Image (cartoon, helix red, strand yellow):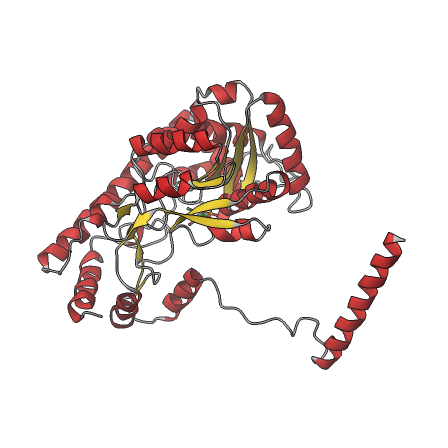
Length: 428
Ligand SMILES: Cc1ncc(COP(=O)(O)O)c(C=O)c1O
C-alpha cells in the first residue's frame, strides 16, 4: 500500500514536471536560477582576463615562488620520479578507505609519532579528496550519526558553512575576529562557546586561520579546550596549513594534540594542498579520534558506507606522492626544511610590506600584518578600497581585504604598498 501510494506520487510529479518541461522549450532544467560563481573564482576569472603587465593575484590561496610563479617542491618531483620508475606499482582500485600506509602516516603526522590514541587504536583515518573532501565526509558522517548544531568562527574559510548546510545541519557562528585590533576576540569566542548548546559541534582551524591569519595562543587554546570539554562540545579540526605557520610540523599541530591528549573525541580534516603544494592532486585525510578502539572500528565501518556510493575509493597518485615523502627519512627532512624556508619567506614578505607602508607614511597602524601568521593577512581594507586597488593597480584580492602573503615577492611588495597607500590617502 505504502509503495503504491509513493509510486503514484512520483508519477504525478513526473507528469507535472513534464508539462512544465514542454512549456520551457523541452528543458527539464530551465526553471533553475542562474547563480554566480563563488567569490574567489570570480576574482580568479577577472585576474585571468586582465592584460596589464602589472597584474598581481593575491586572491587565490596558493604558495608562490619569490617571482610569483606556481611552485612545485623538488621533493615532490623526486617522489613522482620514484613512482614513475616503480614498475611493480599499478593503477588498480584502492580500498574504500585509501592507501593504508598513507592513512597511518597521515595520522602520525598530525597526532605525533608517539600518540597514545594511535597506539590504543582509537583513531580511524581514511584518505580524503583533499581538505574539502575530508571536511565534507566528516560533515556527512555527523549529519547521519550526530545531528547537532555546528558552530563555525566568524570569519572563516567561505566554504565551511557549505559543508554542513548542504547535509542539513544547522550552522551558527562564534565570535573570532576583532576588527578593532585585527586580532582574536578571545572574550567573545569564550562567551559564545559558553552559551553554545551542550554537545554542539565546533569547527576549529588548527593553525594559520583562513582568512584572518589570527590564531589563539597556546594558553588560549588550553582555555578553549577546558571549556569545550566541560560542555561536551565536539571539536572538528580543519588542518589545512600544518607546517606553514611556525615552519615546524609538530609545533603547528600542538593545539590539536592538546585536545587529543585529554582522551576526548574529535574529528580532524587534513589537507596536503598547501603544505606539499599538491593543490590539484586533491590529497587529504579524515581522522576521527574515538574513546575506544571498539568505537573506532564501528566508525570506520560507517565511513565506508558513506564513501562507497560517493566516489567508491579515492585517487592513487597524490596520496602515493605523500606516502613516498612521509615514509622516507631523507625526503621527509627535505620537506620539513622546505616548510621552514617557505614560512621564512612569508614572515619576510609581511615585514617588507609593513616597512614599505611605513616608508610611504601611509595613515594607520599596519603592524597587524606582521603579527598575523600563516599564508594570509586580513589587511582591514574595505570593499571600496579593494575595488579601487583592483581597478587602478590591477591587484586582485577578495573584497573582505584578505591578501595571500604567499603571492607576494620582494619586487611586487612596493606595487602593493603604493596601491594601499593610494587607497587609504584617497579615503575611498
Ligand atoms: C581553512 C581551509 N580549509 C580547507 C581548505 C580546502 O583545501 P583543499 O584545497 O585541500 O580542499 C582550505 C583552502 O583554502 C582552507 O583554507
